[in-house]
Amino acid sequence: MKIAIVGAGITSISTALELARDGHQVTVFEQRNAAAEDASFAPGGWLTPLAAHSLTAPGLGMPLRQLQKNTSLLQASGRLGSPTWRWMRQWKKNEALIHKHGSNPFGAALHAMGQFSDSLRWQHCEDSEALAERKRSTLILLRTPQEASFWSTQIPALKEQGVRCELLNTAQAQELEPGLGQDIAWLHALHFPDGESINPRLWAQHLRLQAQELGVAFHTGMDITRIHHNPVGVEVNGQLHPFEHVVICTGAQRSLLTACGIALPLMSIWGYSVTAPVRDPLHAPRSAIMDWEQQATICRMGQRVRITAGLEMGSTPEAAHHQPTLQRMYHLLNDWFPGGVQLASAQTQIWRGARGYLPDGLPAVGASQHPGIWLNVAHGSHGISLAAGCARALADMLAGHDAAVDMQAFSPLRF
Image 1: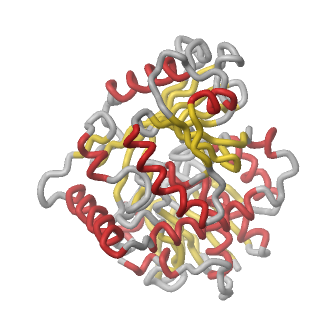
Image 2 (image 1 turned 90 degrees about the horizontal axis):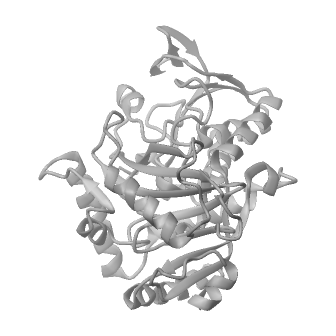
Image 3 (image 1 turned 30 degrees about the vertical axis):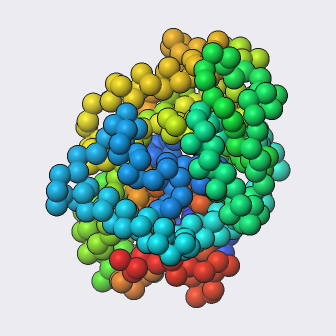
């Protein structure tokens, strides 16, 4: 079949690759001048466990109410009745339902998709360490007894799902990460031996090359005007290009969805990364850590280190960088790994990007209400983690087959 994909981030590239493996003729349209230039350019490299991400899903990760209490972690212009306020209210309702019923269907669906993605990600990769700067083993650093108590309640559920984890003291954690600072106060670390981190853009470019080898055509710098559903096609520079199917993989961007009559409660949440060269490998991180209190991740990527943090709701692409967030990130890097990173280097890179979230924390993957129009959007912080599974599931559904995981929870029609 002749299929178009709109967007060229990690989700789009993964989808193009899976469809090409199935023998389809795939064309990718991207507004920017290169693939993986928007949300996939410099996000955090934390792959697993999913439960460590900020706003993982209702009932997982730090509760939204707790995030709201700390304006250094979350900035939200949520006036009563505004879209941001309505979105947060729905997320909190979902959290309350989970607390009331004692079960978390959102977390269960997310875990199933995460496991499916994990089973696929490295199948066609002979050297993931070189091609994706893959690192194994992750730590969540806990500063207070309250944080340790919170995670102690999560460990049984994680182990029931097959996630290996253990609570370590500071000495045990420093054996795994010898560069951890001696002057910062913390009590415990949650260790995930099977946790992983990678360089997202490096991996996205590797997948792009694989897709091109299978005949996928990438058209970048395109003025994508509209998605048409009758007839099905993509309007580029005012000209309609017909296709049998169109897959929209535009992440946090809603304009093309709205123009196509597809309404999703999609919230764009902006975050930051700072990437700097390693100064001293002995004092730099070996793999990936997360500061739970500060909701910040620090990942080793070859000869560089990347810290990610920040949650800005209701912001815009043109907004100025939130300097208090950036200063907090600099301090965290220096506190956790003193002497390990060259923040003053000319090679240090600051990035700000948006991620798309739905109020149940799950992406929208599957058929829209328009025949021939498919969605693979709103992966939140999990784009790199879920890309392989969501892409394979969509390719199966588009071909009329059952996906390997239950996709009802991910249906774009659930809202």
